[in-house]
Image 1: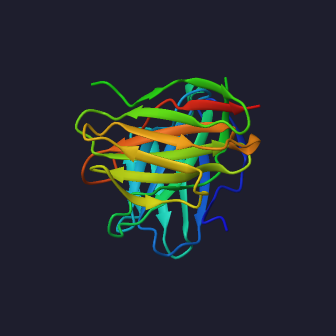
Image 2: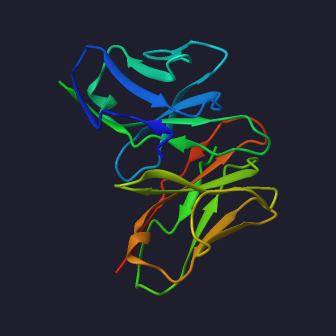
Length: 114
Length: 112
């Protein structure tokens, strides 16, 4: 039972254009969402997060949107750069007592073409 | 500020053996979590420790265990290794409160 789903295993985007990575979740208890970026042979690197009390959070070229009614979030990267090429993981958690567990999607491999 | 350090980086073991992996969290971080990454299942939560106590455990068999020491360093152990245990094992640390998870580079375990 996959509680966090990233339905696109891969995405190719031209340099300078917008990259949109999508993520869906099924567990209504999730109230905090994170995006991680991962290069081969390295651990995931935190990018940006959003609490369920917000519907948008921006950090430079990265913006995360949350649609709670649809249980959907998306990561927008504008403009996309070749260095953004990596695997992007969506993760979710909830603020239950003592619960510091992240549930991850299976990732989307982004390729930014120069 | 030093990051999360995992040792060793690579490990090859034979089926049936046991293995111990080590994780040193960021200084001041008291929570340490472990994750298994495989091509088929993605990143899956193993367990989380805080102040030497296991607070949460994922859906893995009892062959997977861990512990945390008083200096917050953590080890995970896998006994009676199976071929399917081949994976990248990632450790993440976070501050006392909040969700500031920082991951290490992982230990690549290959079981032959």
